[in-house]
Length: 87
Image 1 (tube, one colour):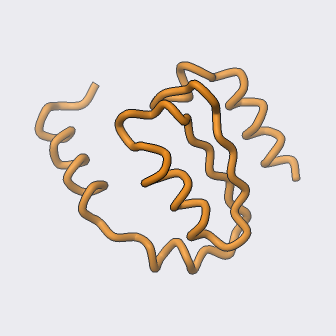
Image 2 (cartoon, helix red, strand yellow; image 1 turned 30 degrees about the vertical axis):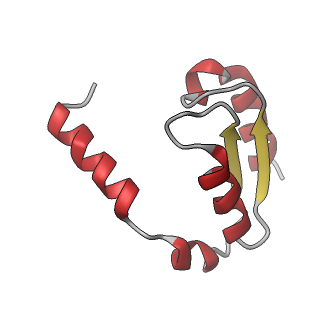
Image 3 (cartoon, helix red, strand yellow; image 1 turned 90 degrees about the horizontal axis):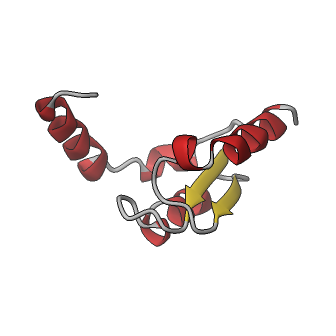
């Protein structure tokens, strides 16, 4: 649990910081995973754009999943992360 002020500041930071040029400079293997029912960060404006911006990124969409994949799809997420790390 975060304090209300910390939550507000975090939201401001991730909603107003433009990281697009930084993403294009990535040189490490990258996996982007996003739920297509995420209401906090809609997939078209976040996961899809992020994956396109990172050279060679691997992109996985979790159908029917919201924000918080570590909770709603923890087993699938764990398998996919371990498979990616094992490459």
